[in-house]
Length: 71
Image 1 (cartoon, helix red, strand yellow):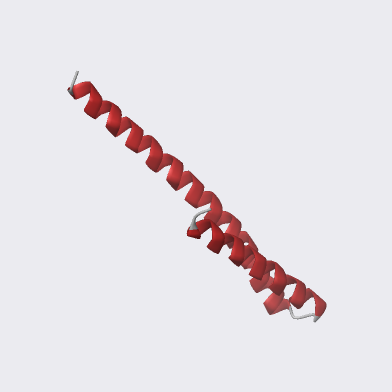
Image 2 (cartoon, one colour):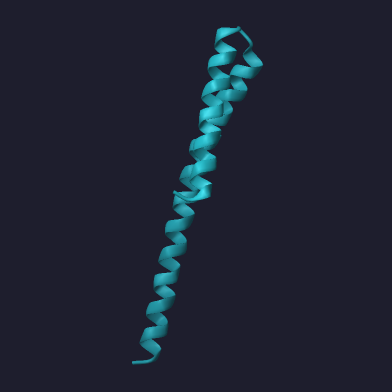
């Protein structure tokens, strides 16, 4: 696991804790903040995965072009 994935998981866990705390003490602001952190953590994880896969594909395409020049 990279440090980015660990940060996203920590944000999701903090969001769950805040959501449950807000639900238990009837504090809507804390509950919504927790819910927002949960959604943001999942969204950040998806964006990072897509970015890494696109970056990997670009690197493969660039390597193929370099290898085709030397043929």
